[in-house]
Image 1 (tube, rainbow, N blue to C red):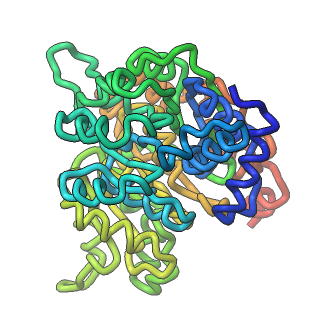
Image 2: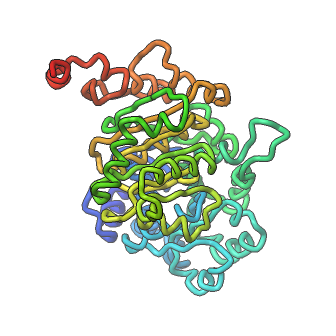
Length: 441
C-alpha cells in the first residue's frame, strides 16, 4: 500500500506535469488514493464535478509513486495503463479530446485502429473501449498480449448503465446491451481494481453495480446530485400543442425568429423518435414555408448516424453555434458536456428518476441560472414503471420538488435557494420583495 504522503507528492507532481492549476476536491483525492491502492471504488459525483480527471491522473500518479518507492516494474515495462469502459462513441471521442488537452496519450479500442495501437503500445496510458469490444475474442487476445502486465485498473464510466442496460426487468426480454452484464469477466483477465463513476446511483443501483461487477467491499463516495442553479417545474398538459403554447416554448420560438444568436440553448427530450418529429414540425410551423429550420434546430436519436451525431454535438458545443435547440431521445443523455445549455425540456415522462437527474444535469454547467421543465399527460404515468418518478411528478403532498427529488438519493438539498427560483411549488408561496412587487403590478 502506498503511503498518503507519497500520494500527495505524486499528485502534486502529476498536476504540474499536466498543467493543472486547481486542487482536486477531497472526494476526488479519496477515490484516486483508494483506487491506486488496489481498492474497488464507486464514485457517485454530480455532473460537472470532475469525474474524468480522477482516472486521467491515475497513470502518472501511480508511475511517480512507484518511482518514489523504488518499485521499478512500471518503469522497466513502460507506462502503466488504464482501461476505461465507456458506453458510447460520442463520449469516447469527447474524453479523448480532454486527454489530448492534458497531454495524455489516449486511444480507443476498435478494428480500425488495431495497427496503430500495436505501433503505439508503449506510449498509451489510457485505452477507451465499449464493453462489446472488450469482450470480443480478437480484442481480448490483443489486450492480453500487449498490455496485460501494464494495466493498473479498470474504470467504468457512466456506471449506472451497468444494471440499466446490462439487465432486463423481464426474464423473457433481452437486455438492451448485454455486454454490460459481463464486465466482471475483465477481472479474470486483469487482476486489477475497478473504479466505477456516475452522477446518479441510489442504494439499489450501487448494490446492483457491486453485484454485477463482482466488486469486493467497494469504497463508496457520494456527493449530492443537486443543482441549485436549475429551477424545477412540472406542467400537466393534454397535447403537444399545449407544450408549444407554453410561455417557455413561445419565448424560445420568438427568440429563434427575431435573433437566433441570443436564443437560449435548449435540449427537448422526447420519449421516441416520432415524438421528436412532432415537436420539430410544431416549431417549423412558426416559420415561413421553405425556411431551413435545420440551421437552428436539430434532431438527435439512437438511429442518427455516428458522424452526424458528432457533428451535432460539435456544433452545439461551440459558444457561437448556429444550433440553438436539439430535440432528442435519451440517446443524448450520456456524457454531454456543454457548459451553456440553459433549458432542459422533457415532453413525456422519463423512464426512471436517475435518468431524469442525469438529463436535467446537462443544463447550467456554467453555474448560471437555468431551468428544467417536464410536460406530461395524465396517461403518461400509467406507462412509467419507476415509482420514484411517478411520486416526484404527482407530488401529492405539494412539498418542495428539490427536497423531494433529493430524498430519492438520500441527499441533502439547498435551503438557501430563493423560493421563486427553486421550483414550481415553492415559487407559488414565495413572498420575497421581488415577488411581492410583481403581485402588486
